[in-house]
Image (cartoon, rainbow, N blue to C red):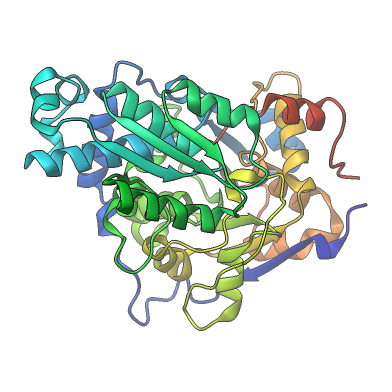
Length: 408
């Protein structure tokens, strides 16, 4: 049963006010984004992922446009995470070589000359699946090693997909944040390099590189919207785990549009809503969600906000939403079973929550207050980013075929 209390929200009354000092986002400016895009373009697997225009769904929901950026096509890995991981690995190697990354395209990074200078490096990470697979893939492509730790309850299918990329990988008995601490300790004890989008005091440089790597997504999406002849988005829904993806996307929007950036809503599962909890505290500081977080949105089951991204989300996001799991299951079913004439998008549990929330806000009277606060209506042009495909095919079928987590 749909209940009003299954979604909580906080409107940020200060996001559009120019008063006070706000977090910097210059590391996501156009110059940095251009460098990131050029690096990714040097990979033979690089291709822009599709931007699905769901025109009939938009009309059905009472908005002007709904665009869904489909990251299931990214590098053949079924998720967006490889963009951040590969760029961070590339930046680390460039630093070791004393060379700017703009001078180190893919073929040069994997060359015998570079390998002889660097030797074999072990990259270490913690993941629910997608990030670890991206790190394993990047390390393997460039001739290095990887070690991956996964939290309790992680999908065996995701584990095997990481191992197929050449990683030493295991599922621990820890929650996500403790798995990150384990990966950090392992890297220090074994001379490895931690590549994590979580950040804390003393560990911010690599998470910053990862956020820069994600920027390729928004750069492509805005380029595709412009090529289609449409106006820029008026609204963007961004899902958050530690917040690095959401902070990256929002930083890119700020760099592109300045004071006229789209109305931006951060969406999280209610069992792991650390950004929402931090915003609710109103002291400007990040606050953690502790314990196990058994949400189906495994990629968002993170309890501690990233320090690098938190300031951007705190100062510029317009709304923070915490929602039940059935919001994302609804999004998955809608995207996988489109209205006639709209393209199909296979979106996983962590990819579809933005679309699920949007459709609930537009269709259910009990959530109308939220839609009104966001000024969603017939002129709204909404951008959603589906960050993963069916990375756990069995669970995807249970939700889409069998109706697990119903939204009625």
